[in-house]
Length: 230
Image (cartoon, rainbow, N blue to C red; front, side, top):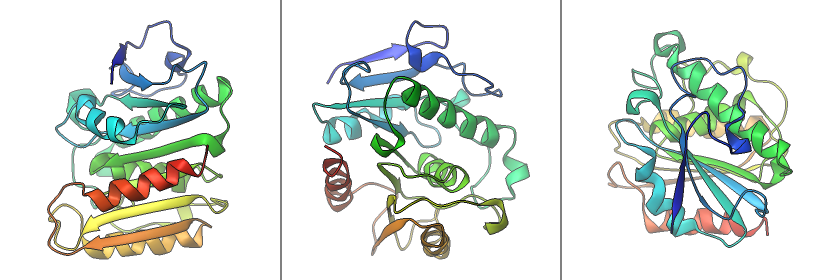
């Protein structure tokens, strides 16, 4: 699978992102799959801490569809926010707000290009998984789907008062190990409960003894999610 690296001042309409707070949003992104003007659906793949967006290319390859564009944003300094996702949100600023604004900018750019939210998928691994869930909870609507590979909602505690609206039966998949040092099992389970309360159709799968990684069952589940929006 080939890909294109787009800079923040590049010609693509994906890069016309407004009101982005630093540090993210100036690093460019990778785009692969179907050209935007021909795509019928889009997947935003958000990388984890310490990894570049190139680390998500094998996942894009695995999920590849003829009608889908994959957008892989790049974090400044290879991290979306500096501390663990279960720290107080303020401790992870300004990176956290900047990252959420970047994801929102991409979603808005895709909508402006003619894709509906119902054809937009948002997912990621580790830090990227946490961002995907947090973005959906803070910007509730009907999406094509949301998937979190080893992640949970962000904050020392989950502040449900910060959420409003409905996810309108958006399919949400959360997969994680029961012994992941980075992702406490209790936070995964609580995230599932909160997202269900926001109207999402949540599938949670806990894999005994799995490391901080992605397995075949998770890939199969996400592929099925994508195939429902044909």
